[in-house]
Image 1 (tube, helix red, strand yellow):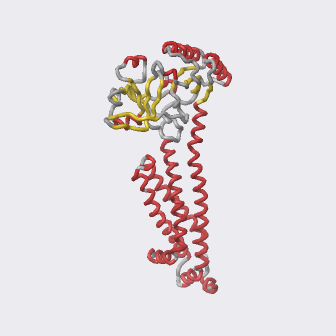
Image 2 (cartoon, one colour):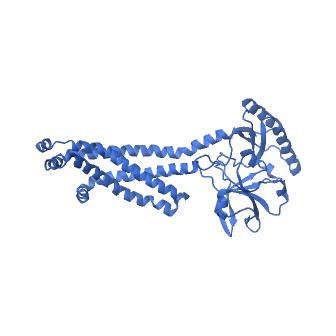
Image 3 (cartoon, helix red, strand yellow):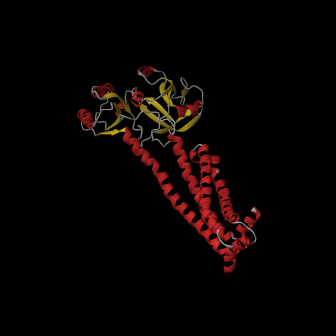
Length: 392
């Protein structure tokens, strides 16, 4: 049976080659779409790692310039107390520009066991950062004032960096960095998704603000009560703007920033889906048209088979099987290219993402070919032997 089908396919190799090429291209595009979808879902099901609700980010330009560190710390200390005195404010924290859900990143490397690890997100935060975002502490502790006199700079790492450096072992108390700048890990926090729900958390390292950090910091996060409204936002803006003369002040809501960055993350997938839809429609129409054309060209053959005893079901199955074999040949070649992605670790994605996307793409193409071949197969089965032979 299959030998006969392969012979029929080979006899029309030029016509079938174009159809197989369409299926192959569609498979590769569908594979890219499913890879992105599976990757987004893989990231989406991870815990957020922070509580972004009722957290406002205040952007300001540093207008107070002084070389006296004590005066600088006093200036911002008074500002924090003024903000905390408002009944709707729970806590305030200063942070570097790479606050959650912003497009700002501060990536660098660290030395570990005489090797340099790149792609580490460095965060400069104060003692209240963890409480404002309600971060989950997995090991050790967060920063406190006692870290000012520590021999080695105290740092907190996230769970992704801890797993990369120490695996399942404990990280608290370990030293990382080069010989000139040793840093001591005092805690491990759950990795947070600072780039939105669909992005990877990434490896992160938190260092504590020092006495001179206020010279370049330009963001503070304010944890407010759920009843904080636009009227309070205006009052908060006036308080900060009046205190920080000639400073540009802007207030953002983390919930709005999260929505915005999620939309931005979905753009590549939407573009791929549009391209994939056009290709799928093109392949479906092409496959449907080729099978329909084959029926009209092979009416004599089909009529002869029916005349010698072939059932309509067997005729229909033959056309469906021919289409499935063409799809299988295309999928074998397409799978060869697709399997290179996890083998070569391209784009630094987990191998499971590629494997799941590969199986989903194969199932999708088979379903598409099956659906497109069922109706032409039924039409072939409905051909009467006498009519077909008479026309022939």
